[in-house]
Image 1 (cartoon, rainbow, N blue to C red):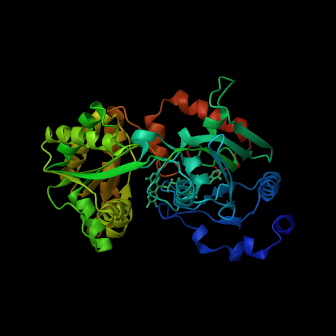
Image 2: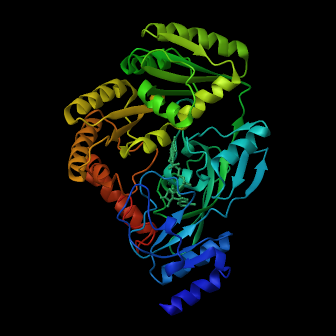
Length: 459
Ligand SMILES: Cc1cc2nc3c(=O)[nH]c(=O)nc-3n(C[C@H](O)[C@H](O)[C@H](O)COP(=O)(O)OP(=O)(O)OC[C@H]3O[C@@H](n4cnc5c(N)ncnc54)[C@H](O)[C@@H]3O)c2cc1C
């Protein structure tokens, strides 16, 4: 034991970047979503690729399991300790390395925060579209979870903007995945295997992101409806009519009311019970005006009560701020479980309707919001004022079983963007064909035969 401590202290000499035994800060020992976490061997904060490689080689030779951590905003328990791991925290690897305007790529270290990337490229006329609500998440974490967010309906998800990844495998070998070439039919796509693998296959040490030109114009619009069913039905019409929205967020009035209360701000529309918050972007004002006109016609077919273009920047900022704060507001309101399920877009209405049936049946309040344009809901099952722990757990688990059953029946998936981690494993395995799980387990063995990289997560 002492010998291995001496070895790691030679890799990370700076005491402020290595924590063993009782020096481990408490925030690494627990996870917001998983309470019964295990102990840790230690926490190391490398500052460069060489240190990561030496840490991985050390842990591999000592058979110490590893958890890679970015900004720790994950919502699936994927960084929750299981017992005896070394946490490799990458938040000090936060350099923007190079903007290459010829290939329109940005090279970044994995600890750079998403919000910093947005600011950096937008100041220079470029656009990195993936847009999870958590602007304080790291790009390494975004790659590992294939993060989605608001703009996926038009621009896609993190996977669509990764040109190249440098990774360290669990045995310490280095690999470069992908390339600057726009096309490839050259063998198996290992880069895409790595994206969304939740730190179970290795450590990402450098990322080349694809950029696109920043659209010149954008406009946000709130559309208010009497019911959320009207709002979700309108989504299909908007998509079919070629209006090409950049975002199409939906939420109930009672969800946004929690955010209003938490932040002491008023949402710009107070009519109706459900909203779509839509953005249109493009290169000319005329294109936006003409699509806005089409949007008006489309949503009126679904009994829209109000179409409110947010021309005042302050109003627009308030609307988006309250939307971004929605999850935090629900979390602060009461104990809850928040899902990130996805169903084919035509089934969003049916799934939402089913959550309302479950609400009546179980007596548990269900709050719904999400990215309606890509069928990704965030259904929150809330505890409310149930005092008895056993009663809450039984009711919650019964609702979860039924809800995931319905998602499967509708052809959906347990996770659209947060990942499986540990908390969705049971449902992931239930909802996935055994042969698919078996092949994933074999792939994991090829990369990580000793099962050292984030063990017990996903599979
Ligand atoms: C308020 C709030 C809103 C959110 N909104 C969204 C949203 O709209 N869309 C969305 O997709 N997510 C959202 N999330 C979830 C979360 O922010 C994302 O999952 C994010 O990608 C996690 O990044 P992170 O840096 O915090 O990663 P962590 O939580 O630190 O880690 C997440 C996973 O990534 C792995 N990992 C991290 N860095 C690396 C690396 N360099 N190499 C290998 N593996 C690595 C970890 O091992 C773990 O499995 C939200 C979270 C919060 C708290």
